Image 1 (cartoon, rainbow, N blue to C red):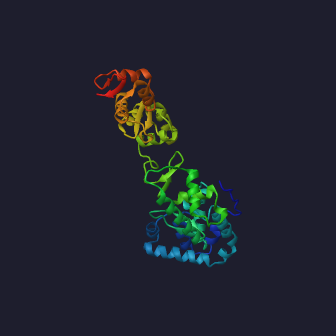
Image 2: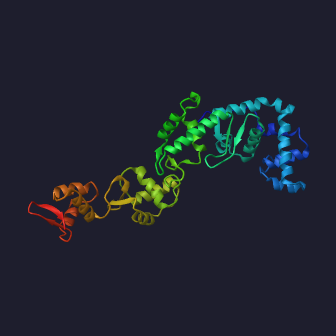
Image 3: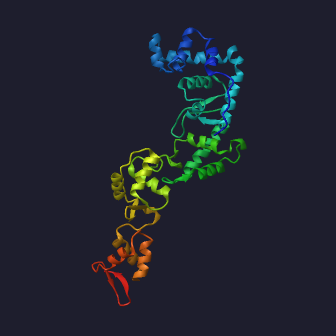
Length: 345
């Protein structure tokens, strides 16, 4: 984490000073609009308009006029050091930061967050960009930096394939490749992670892997998706009981063992490779029971002696040699020639 900046002021005290230059009604409009009252509730333009029996457009005019009046006031000039501190904070967090991250950094109390938010709105150097199809609500103090980061995020997204998963360290390195000319002070993992989190098109799953937000590997929606990610993270065949435990651990979803097993059986992404052991089909495992595996091996390789068949089947299935031999004795499917090699019937 970036080192916390100890701010020298109390946000509620600053907002009180700034609001004090306004008329009572203007104070009331801003207090309700930005949730600066005791209950921290933000009211809509319509709701405030009904209180005063005026139109929502008139409320908007009062809001904009009041903010402009504050910026021109002596109270604003007297509190310039406050806005300088807040600018340093934004720069410390990367110069471009999502609204959620920025306010969360300043505290968990919604009331306090509202007061900070109001100060960012009033401060002339702070620019808020609204959420769009690509990026979350965010704040910056440098338009050029903001544009460079957004362009780098777009390029990063375009290089990701639909269901690709990348470990965090690799994604950070790829991102830094796109922003080589940025100030070195921004090139640290915490800042880059904040920048990555601004994107709505790139996301991180609960296992810490990154990819396209549209992928089920990132926004997993059911037991099968959870199981796929768990087995993939494990990296080798794993028992369905362990899969169920891991789903509960990583995704905080209650995974019943029997249900998990049933979902694994139904999905072609998974291959049963032993007693209750499942692997991913993308790892190259042959699907089917032992008989099917032998059949596919012989179809591909041609006639083979039993030792070679056993060797190849054991690469595909976690079974006893005797299980393979029993299957080979089934004359309905396999026959042995004079050279003791087996063929498909």
